[in-house]
Length: 303
Image (cartoon, rainbow, N blue to C red; front, top):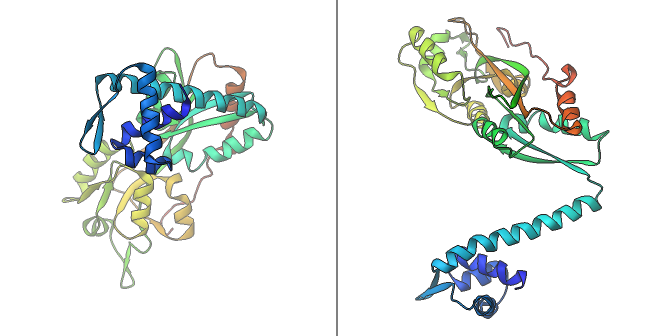
């Protein structure tokens, strides 16, 4: 059975139409039909039911689809394995990481590590902090980096750095007609973007509503979306300092003085299984160095 037949079968199953499958594969429709016939002849059974101009997998076809995808995945992985070794790679470090860290500090950590470990490659899965924890526990990655810690007998949790939470808004949010607005006025006049961090929002909102009534909120689950919307003047939020550091320094976001109560901190954790190999331990040692940690920003009143 040829690999091209399997590719055609999988595509036809996904499209539910031989013509669309042909367009997607850039072949003639007759080629799609021939490949499907060849597979059905080899298996001595039909895999599709024809319904007008469309096709759909029958129970046998549905079962075979799972194996066809597995065969193609194994083939592609084998080709990638050979290619990696031809390029000089000897080992892969699999990392599951939250979006924020993937777009800020992870590139620097990898770049520094590969300066003296060029034979090591990285496989990066960018996901939510909750999924980072699951990936580590389920042995789907070697290292997880996110905002949620874990207590597990076989998992080691290392706090990499602590981020102060700051109240931020678009540039000029605290000034109107040349006079400074009170913090309460800022909250009454702006939407508050919430739940863009997995841990601190419940308690923060509870305390905030004791001091400012009728706070209007909008749930925005992604930090980077919150930052961009704040830049556009759409609202304000409480965010980890490192997420807004560049925007504050460039003047597109202002830190809002906040004195109602002490704001919490966000923490970034490295999660890994205990007793890892030397290569992974070297990478962990590198990113734990203080000189590769986020630099602080002076964010006092008047910024």
